Image (cartoon, rainbow, N blue to C red; front, side, top):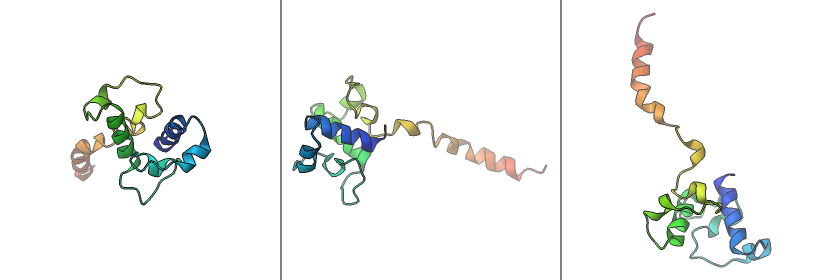
Length: 109
Protein backbone atom coordinates (compact mmCIF):
# COMPACT_ATOMS: atom_id res chain seq x y z
CA UNK A 1 0.00 0.00 0.00
CA UNK A 2 1.32 3.44 -0.89
CA UNK A 3 1.45 6.27 1.64
CA UNK A 4 -1.42 8.08 -0.10
CA UNK A 5 -3.60 4.97 0.12
CA UNK A 6 -2.57 4.61 3.78
CA UNK A 7 -3.69 8.20 4.44
CA UNK A 8 -7.03 7.49 2.76
CA UNK A 9 -7.47 4.35 4.89
CA UNK A 10 -6.68 6.30 8.07
CA UNK A 11 -9.23 8.97 7.16
CA UNK A 12 -11.85 6.31 6.50
CA UNK A 13 -11.10 4.72 9.88
CA UNK A 14 -11.41 8.10 11.56
CA UNK A 15 -14.83 8.62 9.95
CA UNK A 16 -16.19 5.08 10.61
CA UNK A 17 -15.67 3.90 7.01
CA UNK A 18 -18.04 6.50 5.60
CA UNK A 19 -16.59 8.21 2.49
CA UNK A 20 -19.22 10.93 2.66
CA UNK A 21 -17.97 11.99 6.09
CA UNK A 22 -14.37 12.02 4.83
CA UNK A 23 -15.45 14.29 1.98
CA UNK A 24 -17.24 16.60 4.43
CA UNK A 25 -14.38 16.65 6.96
CA UNK A 26 -13.52 20.19 8.07
CA UNK A 27 -10.69 19.34 10.45
CA UNK A 28 -8.06 21.86 9.37
CA UNK A 29 -5.90 20.92 12.39
CA UNK A 30 -5.34 17.37 11.08
CA UNK A 31 -2.11 17.17 9.06
CA UNK A 32 -3.69 14.49 6.84
CA UNK A 33 -6.61 16.71 5.80
CA UNK A 34 -5.12 17.85 2.45
CA UNK A 35 -4.54 14.20 1.44
CA UNK A 36 -7.81 12.71 2.74
CA UNK A 37 -8.88 11.67 -0.77
CA UNK A 38 -5.72 9.62 -1.29
CA UNK A 39 -4.20 11.98 -3.82
CA UNK A 40 -1.54 14.67 -3.86
CA UNK A 41 -2.42 18.25 -3.05
CA UNK A 42 -0.03 20.92 -4.37
CA UNK A 43 -1.42 23.48 -1.90
CA UNK A 44 -0.55 21.38 1.17
CA UNK A 45 2.05 22.77 3.57
CA UNK A 46 3.55 19.34 4.34
CA UNK A 47 4.53 16.48 2.05
CA UNK A 48 2.41 13.35 2.54
CA UNK A 49 5.18 11.57 4.48
CA UNK A 50 5.75 14.56 6.75
CA UNK A 51 1.99 14.81 7.29
CA UNK A 52 1.95 11.15 8.36
CA UNK A 53 4.80 11.76 10.79
CA UNK A 54 3.00 14.81 12.20
CA UNK A 55 -0.18 12.75 12.65
CA UNK A 56 1.78 10.00 14.45
CA UNK A 57 3.47 12.54 16.73
CA UNK A 58 0.06 14.01 17.53
CA UNK A 59 -1.44 10.56 18.16
CA UNK A 60 1.38 9.61 20.54
CA UNK A 61 1.10 12.59 22.84
CA UNK A 62 3.19 15.15 20.92
CA UNK A 63 6.44 13.25 21.58
CA UNK A 64 8.74 13.33 18.56
CA UNK A 65 10.62 10.23 19.79
CA UNK A 66 7.53 8.05 20.15
CA UNK A 67 6.67 7.17 16.51
CA UNK A 68 9.79 5.04 16.17
CA UNK A 69 8.71 2.85 19.09
CA UNK A 70 5.02 2.73 18.20
CA UNK A 71 3.64 -0.78 18.41
CA UNK A 72 0.23 -0.22 16.82
CA UNK A 73 0.86 -2.29 13.66
CA UNK A 74 -2.83 -2.45 12.55
CA UNK A 75 -2.72 1.29 11.85
CA UNK A 76 -2.49 1.96 8.09
CA UNK A 77 0.10 4.68 8.77
CA UNK A 78 2.37 2.33 10.73
CA UNK A 79 4.94 1.60 7.97
CA UNK A 80 5.33 5.35 7.30
CA UNK A 81 5.28 6.56 10.93
CA UNK A 82 8.91 7.75 10.89
CA UNK A 83 8.32 9.98 7.88
CA UNK A 84 10.15 7.70 5.45
CA UNK A 85 8.92 5.39 2.72
CA UNK A 86 9.99 1.82 3.60
CA UNK A 87 9.76 0.82 -0.08
CA UNK A 88 12.74 3.06 -0.80
CA UNK A 89 14.90 1.57 1.96
CA UNK A 90 18.47 1.02 0.82
CA UNK A 91 18.33 3.40 -2.12
CA UNK A 92 20.98 6.07 -2.18
CA UNK A 93 23.58 3.99 -0.36
CA UNK A 94 25.39 3.52 -3.65
CA UNK A 95 26.44 7.16 -3.56
CA UNK A 96 29.12 6.32 -1.02
CA UNK A 97 30.75 4.08 -3.65
CA UNK A 98 30.25 6.51 -6.53
CA UNK A 99 33.77 7.89 -6.20
CA UNK A 100 35.32 4.44 -6.44
CA UNK A 101 33.21 3.65 -9.48
CA UNK A 102 34.32 6.84 -11.25
CA UNK A 103 38.01 5.95 -10.61
CA UNK A 104 37.41 2.48 -12.03
CA UNK A 105 35.96 3.99 -15.20
CA UNK A 106 39.02 6.19 -15.71
CA UNK A 107 41.51 3.29 -15.60
CA UNK A 108 42.76 2.02 -18.96
CA UNK A 109 41.40 -1.31 -20.12
